[in-house]
Length: 242
Figure 1 (cartoon, one colour):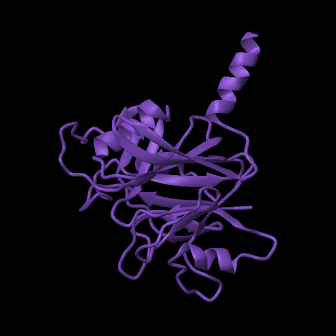
Figure 2: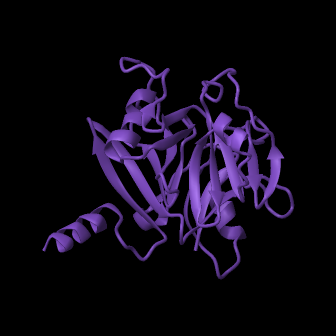
């Protein structure tokens, strides 16, 4: 009986679904979130910036239409900060090819609010890794995008987040489990502070590592729940392909 109860509880957290991505609405301390969970051991998580002709995708539909007929885009989210010409601000690797350098040091804006981090996708796993740790380990990624600030670092909130902050925006981010098998993408559905957003990853989702992706341009593509958010042109986009 104890085994059966534990098995049911496990399914409640990581449900088996027909889609490669399981999305649901959640609430925490009065704020609303959309949470999408991916098993990195079985699913095809990629980054998208330019098509075969070198043109910026910019929107989810452009990626979906560019995929072969045998593949579908089952999930996507804006995947990090970018310059006006859509080039990633920080480290970027797509299909093993690096196009931007790592910037682990302090600088302007949210990206430079160190520690920042890298979302690194490898065979059978995906990890959020603090940038200086990533640099020291010389980690090789098939796909990678750098953003900042880190939200959760080894189970601790970013040291510069203020609990009484009044700076609130729609925000999106990604968190990973310790073993790199579980990836959780989150978009807030109302404006939240960094402290509140990071607390959701750590305290509600139980994730030891989490990274802020962006704020004002946060967008989500999740056909399983009828989401295809309109909005600004994007730079890097994280997607799951079936």
